[in-house]
Amino acid sequence: MALVPDVASSTDPVLVEEHGTPIDAPGLNYFVFGLFFIFGGITSLNDVIIPKLKELFTLSFFEASLVQFCFFIAYAVVGIPGARFVKKIGYMRGAVAGLLTMLVGCLLFIPASQSAVFGVFLFAYFILATGVVLVQIVANPLISLLGPVKTTHSRLTFAQAFNSLGTTIFPYFGSILILGSLASITAAELSGAELDAYRTAETQAIVNGYLGLATALAVVAGVVWMFRNRLKGERHEETSFSEGLTLLKHPRFGYGAACIFLYVGAEVAIGSFIVNYLMQAEVLNIPEQEAGKLISLYWGGALVGRFIGSGLLRVVSPGLLLATVATGAITLIAISANSTGEVAGYSLLAVGLMNSIMFPTIFSLACEKLGPRAADGSGIINVAIAGGAVIPTIYGALADATSLATALALPALCYAIIAGFGIFARRPA
Image (cartoon, rainbow, N blue to C red; front, side, top):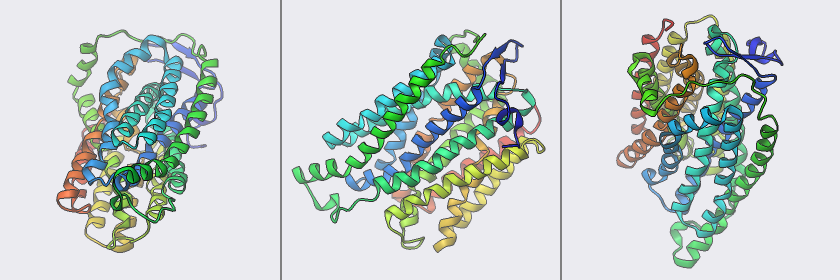
């Protein structure tokens, strides 16, 4: 943590907007780190649940990808209205609203399990993601403004490390809870009432997990509500919907938003099907639960890389470092797609290390100099996160038509465009 003393060492930071008005926010750093941990962990659980639902509802790869589509499409639907909502009620109350919406989404898994209908699960994911979007709209601009402009890239990368901590821990224990089924039959062997009963019983583990999360979210929301007036002097520039979209006319911001779309899409596409990829006979040929546990290596690589990256970004051009790791991701994908066994499996898992600094670096490069329009920029960036809805569905369709390895050409193309943005934005705005 000593790498970023202005974030990790100060217990009484002052939030300063570019127009010069200080916002008194004691202890705000810990609050933001907690938000990153929560929404990161919940998002990564999708990677564990997708193979479970794929088996229970006998889905194709494309149909299974609808879980990510319904989750990440919430960013497109809620992003900009959510930013306006947060600007109206303030960051802290916006965080409470997001946490409570996530709680409702968790509780919706109860009727989803009881009905044994895939569509109800998809609706629950959309509501859960709506809350995640609101929380993320709050977290990103807060950490960006939490100190000097020159260390924004480093601070946001450091905060994202807590996001990665959540994405590393949640899938491991989620695999034990959700993929550890003792069932000796599969959904493909059943029909009618027996099939419905099997689905209800097998999804009970999912329900139990999300009920635990709902309890934790209720506690966190209560704590945040107690400190709802913590920010002193918070101000936001009021803009219309069309005025917010004018940010896309700026080449740097527009290109950056497109890269967020591609980055999230590539990262989610790989994570969504990595369990199925590792289970293949020509890769690691391991059971579902063991493959699920290895997801923690994918997200854990991002965790390690973000702590390292928060230091490197203080001495290396953020744009050039972004181009370097994007090129590294392409190289690892090529190795995995053209090999077998442990080389194929672990080289794809290592893409997580390359992903480490991408989101925070793209975000901060795109949003440089936005000042009081930071909430607008964050809202549009959150719309761009809908790439996690689009790219994985295309990947799933390609995998159905060809193979999981061949379909990796799609995320490789995404990383190539991101490398170009790194070179384009290598100089300060």
